[in-house]
Length: 258
Image (cartoon, rainbow, N blue to C red):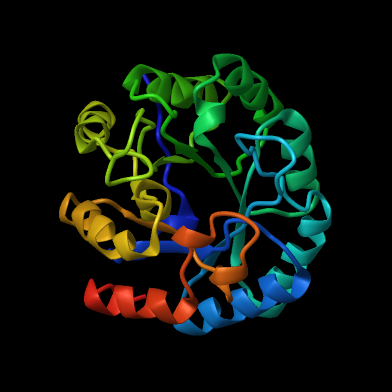
């Protein structure tokens, strides 16, 4: 049995939650400019990757701990909550030391029971909210197992992020959504909030709106979107990032009021 407690940061009084920010923290200016524009739109939770688990070596793997200082400035100047990805106990330690408000666990981490156990133990005794992405492979038991490991460590302020599943060969999506798996997760843990990550499902900015619309039609709690002040020059996932202005247009088209 997994005990689920509300995440106050996601409590939008019946409104859909939108968490937005760049795939990667690249510079202090990039973060502050993006966060400022999002804050002016009414976005209250800012996401940014500082440690990036890339598929191949010798690519941009994140700015590291320096990004934590930049996120402190984001919090100070905008009042936004900040969420980062962690993949091991060291990441957890540094995130907690630097006042990060929410953590997320990526698809590669969720797929590893060893990694999940280490992270769960490193979080024991804290009350920080944790967002758990689905594992890379379409295995609902791994997804639920990750949540169970957190629950056994006393981490109950949790939510899920549906970011799609890897498949071999060419498909419409970067990661196929397989909506049935997320639906089964809801059936088995109905009190668990589920957010949709249309950026990673689609892999291209043109698909973000239709994927978000499909998720909202399934009554997802909100969206987890990659937004960059200048996505064409982004150091990672440039094709699937959008500008704050584009996000505003999408939210308007979806009738999401922040």
